[in-house]
Image 1 (cartoon, rainbow over the protein chains, first blue to last red):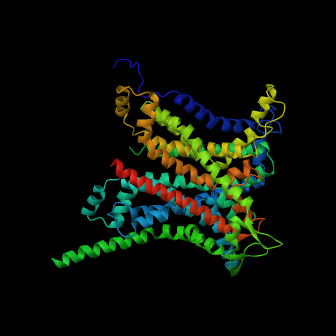
Image 2 (cartoon, rainbow over the protein chains, first blue to last red):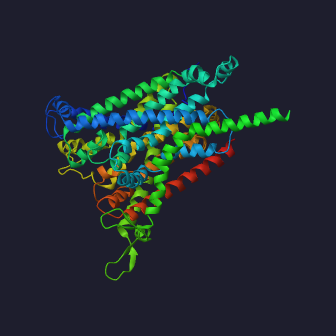
Image 3 (spheres, chains in turn brown, cyan):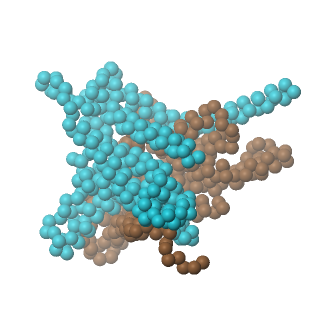
Length: 267
Length: 306
């Protein structure tokens, strides 16, 4: 092909704006990470390279405590959400439309449509009533809330995977006298696994990142890492928050990268 | 013959029943921990405020009245609650501003990604996806650290001698908007990219062959074709902006509240749960109207193209 003199796809200024956007998206995060390695106590001047803020975060019992709680909630909520979403996806795909199908879609995606702050105060009211009635004051409230808003995120990739799956293999299994359960376990589940894994990872990240709903639902002493950080930022900034953020970022990027490659393998 | 038909029918019924059983856990969890509580909020908005927060179980419309009106303490007359109206107006204004700015920045960015060679396209897309999945609180904190008075922008400007006093950006509406554009930009770029990826450049070529200018091609060919993406992105940005809580509370401070902060206030120091509930329902109603408008719009545009 001859060198094209006229670039069909070029639009004046678009590349410049795009480059500005990419720089603007990453520069604040890079500066945030850089200040995590700052030896100075103030975050406005550079006092040389140091790991002391990471050490100070590591030795801060509240930080460790909140981190452990965040992981507990995220693992449990993502697991419950993924199981419920997998079942729901199996129930809502590969079928002709039936009464209530649209209703199910709307129901499952509802947490995506209501502003988080509204769900947060709704759960605050509801759970405070339950707490008065039952006296229960454990992590169950947070796990329940997280499971609910994680379900649509787990549901999406699982449903996408199911819809692109070949039905003939399951029919073959049935033809060979496999029971429905056996056909599911030996044929459907292995094929669906990448979708389930992707759904779990999305749900996990969503749960780990949540600030608003957690902040309203949590009881005293139930801080997760994001709500702990929110409280600290409001009180005043120390580079320790930069150090925690850096560790948190690293973890998120790791999970997203895994997700990216897991969902790419599909083809 | 009839019995075979009956068996098929009952098998179908059985299948549907199984499908309801399978979806039951998800539906029950969402009913209990997402949808159900919303009805409680609706009920609470019609109750009287308790003296120490919570509610008293008697019917009252005070919560709804005080969304937009306030009762004078002395002569009991009603007047517009200017503070609330200002917050409603700020929320709408900043959300529309954020949506427009994310289009201005997101459109060229999505176009840039969509026109990369296939090998590198995925990498650019990945670069947009990472911030999307990065904690919103951390990204807001990153912006806060840059724009505050002791932040890098003000420090550099002062060192360069352009200004003597730091520019007050933090705790202004501008700060909230910068923060929201920053955190929600990926939500605009991703759906825009999805519709631009399918763009047929033969149409663009045809436009140039007919002596259209670059601007005319953009306005008359590219923009109408990717309009569904623009609308989807606008909805995705507008809705969380309107209900934003973390970004305005960190960047706007106590004075520049948005609806999310007003709701929090009523459930916290304000101790007016019915009012907080009424504002929550109002916010949800605005979001639902925006969503319905989107669904209707998307439906009709599909008909037109299909």
